[in-house]
Structures are given as C-alpha cells and as structure tokens.
Image 1 (cartoon, one colour):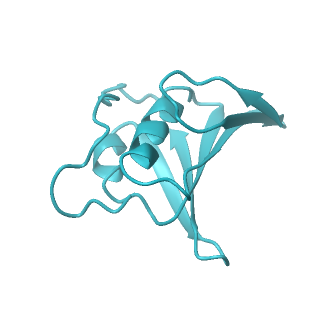
Image 2: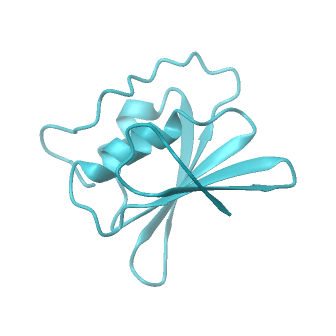
Length: 112
C-alpha cells in the first residue's frame, strides 16, 4: 500500500491495487466534523468504475450519503472495535452530478 497525495484532504490517503481493482483508503475515526465529509468528498473524486474508496470513521457518515447517492454506491460495515467501515464505488454510467464542494451537512441528521 502506498501513500498518495489527495487534493483537499486533511488525513493520509493510501492506494493499493489487487486483481485490477484500485482501492483508496483513509481513516477519519479520530477526526471531528467537518473532516470526515471533507476527506470523503476529496477521495470520491479519485474513483472510476475500476476503483473503490474505503473510509474508516467513528460512525456511519449519514449526512454524506444523500449528497452522493446519485453517482456512488456505498456499503457500511460495523467493525468489532465500534468503528464504521464504508466502501464506496462509482456507479456504472453515472451522470457525475455530485457537488464535491458540499462538505458540511448543515442541519439535523449530521452523523459524521
């Protein structure tokens, strides 16, 4: 796994390639708002149909999902240590409508 630079990120990102699938990883489990959302939006911009993004966070980033659901799929797994692992994939033939500047959830239901 190699460390990579990601524009706009405030945490380290890592990249690995296995069986033709590129995986980007980052961990915001020790960060407070808005860092999980900021880093997720930065990382999502890396994705194409042959890659995925793995986010480790202190809980599921529910405020993020409505902002990206048109362009990305996501799966949340509760880890044994209580953290949330979210795997993001770009939808095939998506229309790329995500506004990556939407890095705060403003309002209720913001669970980053």
